[in-house]
Length: 367
Image (tube, rainbow, N blue to C red; front, side, top):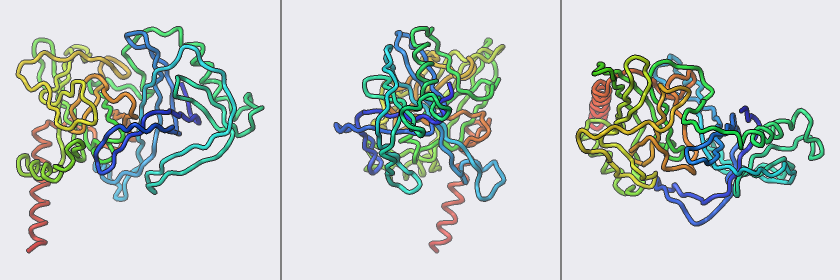
């Protein structure tokens, strides 16, 4: 459901990402997020009710879309997603004074907004949906303040009438080719964001086909062992001939209808490890059975994949449920990354050539 104009606040443990190292702390604080776009109710397999929130950010990308001709860059949207448990019995909408605290990434500082009047209601023990009461607390029904009531009514009327599904609507145009939707913790994506997503279909075997999905990350910044970052970058350059981190997994799909039903994460399966870990390489053995797809986006052709650790090990499930995720949808137009069909071998060779060119120019300057 449309949630434009609403805010989301949550009291939770603070995390530290100083000097690249991610860790949860014992300190608690209330986080405030604006620019919500949608709020949708879902039911999990164990009967829990979840509220899936989405928000957006606008950026000007110069390097994320080299396929576009503009020299100064192009406008693109960042898509964010967060799921949160929600109580069956919602509280009524209340009016109070509030001061929001929002981080400005462009100026690298916190901004305070308020104190101002707002309408809010609690959605679990430590989370709230709200909007500024621009027309005053006594005027909840006027046009400018209707959104908070629409969302409250939607949740209250539907929370006890949900059927379980593992199919989630992303509110984007349909796409009929099998391919993934990727989620990455936003705090990791600040330096380790995805630059390219490639889906290359391999030949059909026994009624099945596999899609090789290759992700090119801007970097692979170690967090738990951050002291080894520079050494690790040197090893990557000398061993693999590239600076970018490149990872691949396979989607197994039916050849007749492109429905995905299996996933292979050879050497990059995260298991239950989260963002604090940076040396995870699960599923190293040969001929391991594929993992079942747990969640789908829009239809059964688009399995959802979660990047869970700092070294970009991934899985079909989320191990960082309390963190906002960047949502990478390869077929939307205003995306800040390249979406293609190149094989991993081609991508590896391309980045090796770039590394060689960079090294040659550097040596020339040092002479």
